[in-house]
Structures are given as structure tokens and as C-alpha cells.
Length: 102
Image 1: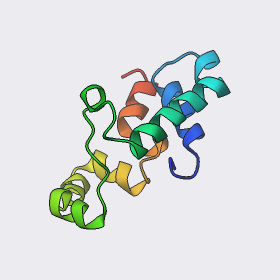
Image 2: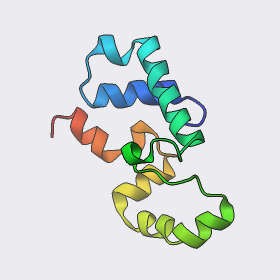
Image 3: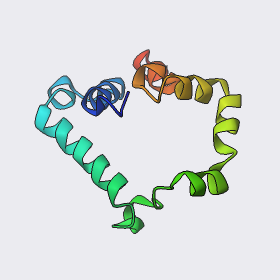
Image 4: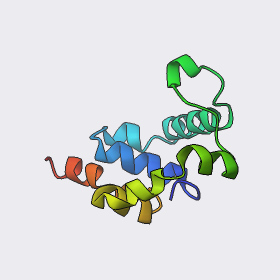
């Protein structure tokens, strides 16, 4: 769960992507990636040309702009599994396929 253990999720994603153990277990590097993600989440209006992010929505904005997205994602078996797994690396079918060499 990225909300409660972002470091573990970053390490697991790095491992699944084939990043060497020295890098995906390096606490300073993992903390850098987590910090960058936190910064981008908290300040989405900075460096928008690089990230292509939009502002984080409040509940009303999310419903108006993205109200059907969760429903559409749940209809897809792989996306639905990932959502049900709280977006964890373990529930990501693409990462699982990558780790199996497919």
C-alpha cells in the first residue's frame, strides 16, 4: 500500500522492473524517489511541462471530472485487480508479468 509504506512499494516496483538490487534497496535512492513523488503530489502545478500532471482533485472535482474512471477501470480485469489491491505492486499484473520475464 503506497499510502502506508511508499518505500516498500518503490522497492518492489524497482525490483519488478529489473533494477539492480543495489539500487532498488538503497535507502537514500528509495527516499529520493518517494520524496519526488510526494513533491509532485503536493505541488502538481510546478514543472507541469515535465510531468504533465494536473492539480490534485478534491472530492467534488474528482466526481465531476473523473467520476466514471473508477467504474471503467473496475470493468477491466487487470485494472480491477490493481484497484482492489489498493494499487500495490503485488496486485499489478503488468509488474507480475515483467518479473516472470514475459
